[in-house]
Amino acid sequence: MIPGRRGTLRRPALYMAIALLVLSACTARASETPADRPNISATPTVAPLEPQVVNANAFTTRTPIKHVVFVVKENRTFDDLFGTFPGANGVSFGMDHGTRRPLIPGTAGRLPSDIPHCYQCAIQAWDHGKMDGFDQPPTGKWAYSQLHRSQLPNYWRWAERNVLFDDFFSSAWGPSFPNHLYTIAAQSAEARDNPRRPPRSMSNTFGCDAPPEQKVEQYDSQGHVGLVPPCFDFRTEGDVLNRAHIPWAYYAATERQRGYIWSAYSAIDRYRNDPAQWARYIRPVDSLLGDIAANELPPVTWVTPRFELSDHPDYSFCHFYDHVPPPDVDRMGFGFRVPLLVISPYAIDGKVSHEEGEFSSVLRFMEDNWNLRPFLTRRDRQATPMMSAFDFSQTPRAPDPLPLRTDCKGMKFPKN
Image (tube, rainbow, N blue to C red):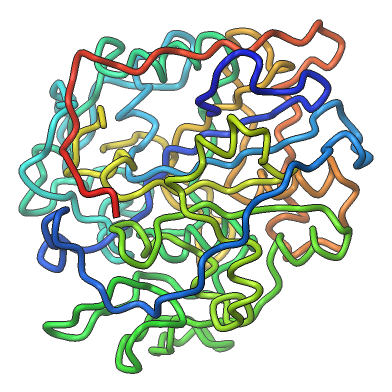
């Protein structure tokens, strides 16, 4: 999704905007704090470098696409958002321990609490492919809910005018930490859950700047699970882009904002612990709209919103049951199905694509588009690049920005 205005994009630098509404993310409700008092303990960093206008047309691509914007959002399955979308593989009922139950109307406002989505919670919900174990305390009622067209008019409009994928999955079972790593590296070093915060911890990070006692579950080479610091040094898509001299940026909440836990590069040692690298590539998400207006987005951009704007329960959807068993590709996943919107001047108007994909598919598109090799892992090597979304022979459509919604209110939150 590119929130912008007509005239802010130079026509030759055509975009593919990818909005991922992710069933992976987050902290347990008990460890969260009110939005106006975020936990703060992550290491402060120097100010990011000022972005520069980049001529994206100067880089050779296999398609007319010159910009990819990968927007990663939180904790919504396909059936929750698009289960009633015409032509999509959706349902309006779920199975609850062998009993069929209707999906109740969801709320676009705040839920009373979060919905369990840890690694073990996901395995319980999957129930060996029966997809009937989502009713877990204390929020089983809301796990079996569904939003309708009137509650997400902008998402619905984008799906009607672009391409909606209904066979797209999160990369790993469970919550955000491993899945966000997949969005930048097609792996998570086999970390499978969120890092465990120590009791009474003020930690606001899932990365290398976490307290020494904060650890994450990880498979070892024999398949055993141990606890390790949430700080790794594997190769990322940013490194592949650097090797090809293609500019990129990662927009995320800062260390003093809720949502910094989803800043995936904070868990990559050579970025988080190198002030020059961090300042060069990691940008405050609050500066995104200004950088778009100034035409300062690089060819490849990741965006993870602040917590309050991420669609993550229990925050307002304005400011989860799924019926399709995920394919078993390895011990990490796939995780549950999530909606993928591909928004582009070359997206086929109103198509529902049944092409199977996962987060690594977005990286595979980048790699194919900019002729980037070698692959990161087996995941992106085997992923499809989602070419079913495009018709490059059609006349590229003009931008179609939508106005901000005025019919609902999200929760107020501080500016820094």
